[in-house]
Length: 156
Image (cartoon, rainbow, N blue to C red; front, side, top):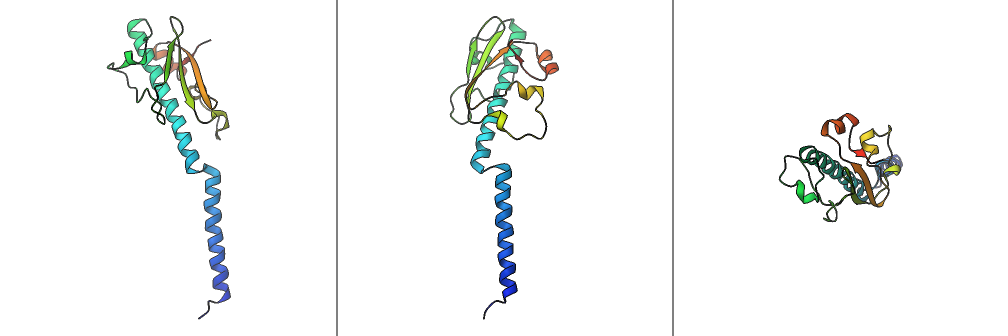
């Protein structure tokens, strides 16, 4: 028994609507691989933020910067990870001066290319990055000052 023509047209339209909806959804949010890459970069920024607050706490307690990230272990500060979530490589940390230091990470995306509905807050602008290895020159500050400013203090 053959299907009536209107049923075939309805099925074809339904399939077209479903395929179009899925395609448009992927266009809007990106492919799963793109989302995974974006999440890794967001995690890197989160890790660097945690590290900068831990460095500030260390500096506030000791009046000096830690020599290495290992010096932050066992303290009452929270660092989710001092290693890249994708590669497992440690983030780079380097003391530049009495209060100045540098944190480096390798990013996969360019933060300027991310679609945003609103301008990013100051705390996010501190961590703006291009794709590839990026180093952030930061300056030790008190935890209260960092909270007041909305994040780490960029070195001049």
